[in-house]
Amino acid sequence: MSILVFGHKNPDTDSVCAAISLADLKSKLGNDASPAMQGDLSPESKFVLEKFNVQAPHIITSYAGKDVYLVDHSDLAQSPDDLDKANILGIVDHHKLGDVTTNQPVECWIWPVGCTCTVIKSMYDFYNIEIPRNIAGIMLCAILSDTVIFKSATCTEQDKQACEALAKLVDISDLQALGMEMFKVKSAVDGTPARELVLRDYKDFDMNGNKVGIGQLEVVDLSILDKVKSDLEKDIAALKSEGGHHSIFLLLTDIIKEGSEMLIVSDDESVVEKAFGVAPSNGKAWLDGVMSRKKQVVPNLEKAFA
Image (cartoon, rainbow, N blue to C red; front, top):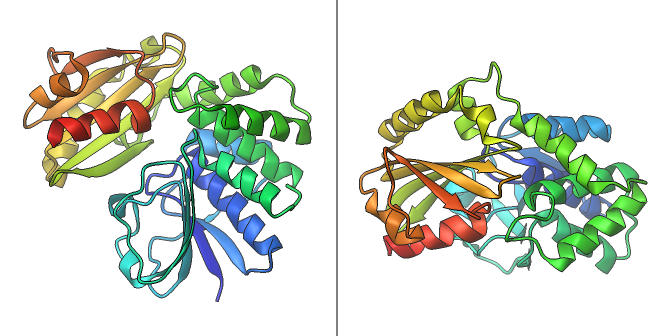
């Protein structure tokens, strides 16, 4: 039976490219492994796969009875609804260990780095397996995306070293230019429905028994979002009413100014001030220097909800 390798719901570039890369590595190690994803490609992910001529994984939403590897997540809220009926063989991730449990020992590579593909690069090195050029290209893009071209608080020297090595494999010298090319694609919002923008990079979390949704839109200039901001505010309010959330937060991240405007719908907005020391005004708060949901937003909110 083929092993399925997949990332979190609402897949981003790291979750897609990590699934493809780990499936390639596992196949080269003698396993029958295939990448999968739980939802549609984002514009950035589509751009990256087309740039390096890599086929997109199939969308699979049910994993019952399958042998699986999880990449880029270990939280049940971000996993398939029937994950408890799957056979988890391993987890490769760069987030905190979530609430996924297993009934047998599993292979785990969970490192405090900026991107899952950084971990997978080290796995290729560990097993002395050569990385194909096209796979190296998408891994490079995933790291640039997740570390916001090395500006994110999550970025480590390991991420930078992995990029340097991968860039040599694909003969790319200007990482800044490649990163900005990707973020310009990511910044395109014209004609895109508000719900699609909200869910483009969105995750649900269980915070002390409260369902909390956190989305993020990263753009090269916040003014790009001026004409859609009111629609985004209305849509996160609608999403909250649909899903039984305590709160939904949408981060509008300016990668040049290096900060985020947070749009807020919550049963108790005081959690924002508790988490960040900033009092919301009209359902918004500017968080200077905040660019990483994983390292700067989720941990602070979890403490505020505790």
